[in-house]
Length: 564
Image 1 (cartoon, rainbow, N blue to C red):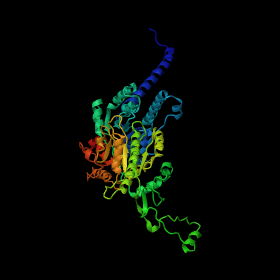
Image 2: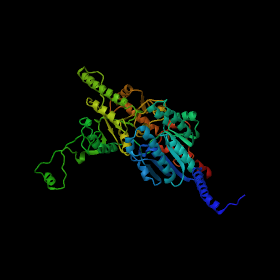
Image 3: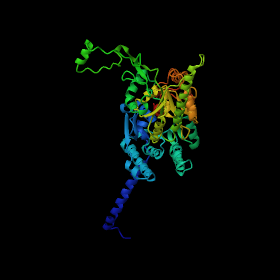
Image 4: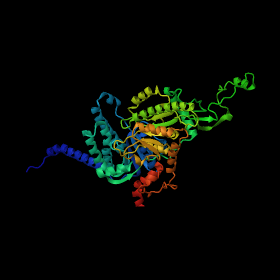
């Protein structure tokens, strides 16, 4: 046997270096993907694969975590302005994801652009979750849907960083996809497998309805803690006062003035003394005599170079009062929609057309009744109706063109689309007389957040019926349920008859006030062991903060409480 020479050792050096490098890479990869037991306590990363400002439930989660002393990172896309609390709370960090280049979407077909978009999302989320956030968070809260690739990425990041994953189930991703491509499409089958595989094993699951919890536990045998967290409005949502309504419509005046269909439809108003819905004097447009040309008052006005022109139609100081609702105001209906295929705006449009026809008929009957002998029953006319539709979405342009065509022949109804800032939206809801919800769940397992917002502002609703809607809307108690446009039109007539003194609207609004007062001593905000009793959510409305404290706070603090 020959002994190795110096040249043999020199020849082995490159091989040795390769072995060391490969071993180092393998060790680094193993260490990177190895689950970690150490993480930053009282910290959470909230992932929203969408516009953060248009994800109210996740923004409310972030606020609640931060107010419970959690360092809170929110990962999502820039767009609408988030709620003010997220910019005010020092523990909240907004981490915006970069959007895929827009020109690629215009240049490439969907089949090529979609994979590129997903790869871009994967890279950006991993970069933020693994590198930009220096310390591993204790919890990762993810919104589902969207499902692909979010659930897989959260599962991976949770494994790498040792974080506890909480999935907030808003709906089912595969059911939304089925609306676009059909239930039997191969993509739907893959999406169903993907959602079940990566959504099954989480530390905890939050559900917006009991129906969704029961369905998913049976379908996928979900592991971990399972809690129902019904949507509730934040604490600042309330019924708007006359002062707030007055100030809101002063701010909205430029937007309403641009609507050609409203010219001559709304009651005359003179800012800042009156709006189409409020006034600040005992008369709608009080007048005062103008001063004589030879009077001292007249000479003092024209001699001052800084004096503003005085309108003869402006109320005098003694006539101005605090704002109050005008008796001649139109009824105000509000509907919020995403302008997508899962919300059929055509139902509301058809119902408004039927309301227009019925309003004309009642005017004709009222005229005939006046010519008949005394003693005939009184015929109540319907008020003018202004429908304000909020939201953004792909079908908005198509539907608003149809609205413009129909309104050319309408006398009693107008429908306009507005986009409001976050601080004005609850004031509009609290100003309205009725809300309409057109949401139809793709899975029939989720509840519309817009109805929650309306209830929080004391606004009764007419809502499109589906399987689990009864968990939120109690037909005849806090709102009405309809199945088609004819039923909705009938409900509008019944609720707005004798407006503004409609007893049916008053009763529905009163039930919302009572439901929020049934618990005279709400759960203490800092009680970590407070739990939700079975069926409690049926009779106690409360706010988001109270509901979150009763449901989520015990979950995220249970380990800390056990260690004390």
